[in-house]
Image 1 (cartoon, rainbow, N blue to C red):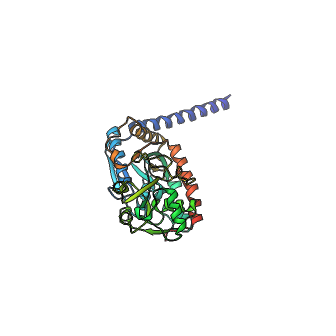
Image 2: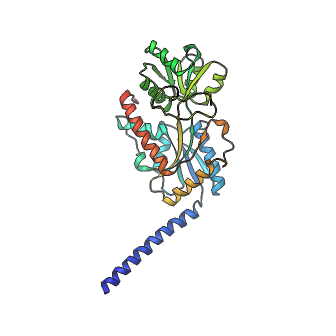
Image 3: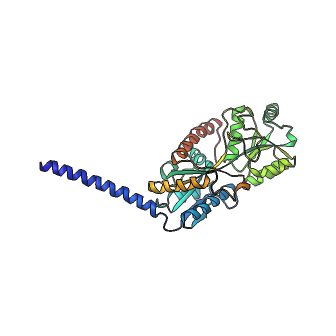
Amino acid sequence: MKACQRSAAAVVAVAMGAGLIAAGGLAQAQAYPVKPIRYIIPFAPAGTGDVCGRFHAQKMQERMGQPVVIDNRAGANQGIGIEAGAKAAPDGYTLLQGALSGIVMNTIFADIGGKKLPYDVNRDLVPVSMVCTSPLYLAVHASVGAKTVKELVAVAKARPGKLTYSSNGVGGTMHLATALFAYRMGLDMVHVPYKSGAQSTTDMVTGVIDLLFGGSLLLPHAKAGKIYIVAVGGTRRAGATPDVPTMQEAGVPGFDVSSWFALMAPTGTPRPIIDRLYRETEAIMRPGGAREGIANNDVELQSSTPAELGDRIRNEFQVWDKIIRDTGIRIE
């Protein structure tokens, strides 16, 4: 009888302990935040990632009642900022903007022989929500004589090793998007890496380079007739160019590349805080939400659940690991 009483008492104690833990987590989420939040952006100011992050931070600050302070940590292909976020205290007061090239590409290049990273994104960070995407446009200089993807493929196959494409550096999204295009269509083209997307765009627009994948900086030049926008990299047409087909519509199978920016947090951040951050982000990004102030920046706002973002990141790893290994691209 006493043993039964002790067992019953133990069950009650465990239940009470679990209840206290749950109540503590709930109370923590309800109180959060009680001080300023640091929002690390691994890019320099004024780029697409910075525009996206600043918009998100401003709207979160309005909704959550505490300052959300931007901390631009550019450098090492986003590695400096990612390391700062990965090694921060998991208390909800340091958040990180993750992006395709920094989170996925850097890890793959390190795994296949590159410089070892001082963090592990799969171990040290957890997904919170997608925040925005930005379409990549395949642009061709008018001198190439191709106004469609089909015509560009024909020119490239007729002139193997002659067409040039630029990017903002080896292993970045601009580079790998074009490498994927060449891989899917069996093309031989020459990569010319630059130090920035702006520099690579300038030389393509002036005819020094034949083609590239880039952002909205290309659109005014297309309107002026200097270049042709022949396709969009994602699976949906871009709002700024509704008449331009996607790469898949243009005949390139299995092509889905767009720049994305997502909210992440250090592993160990309490689940109630993760859920709160997701709910606030979803409210900001939903149709009819606080979307004003970013429409002209070629940024498409969207949210996702933490699980959906995790699934996307895992899928990106699977796709790009194969492509990078098959093409032999390496970062020096």
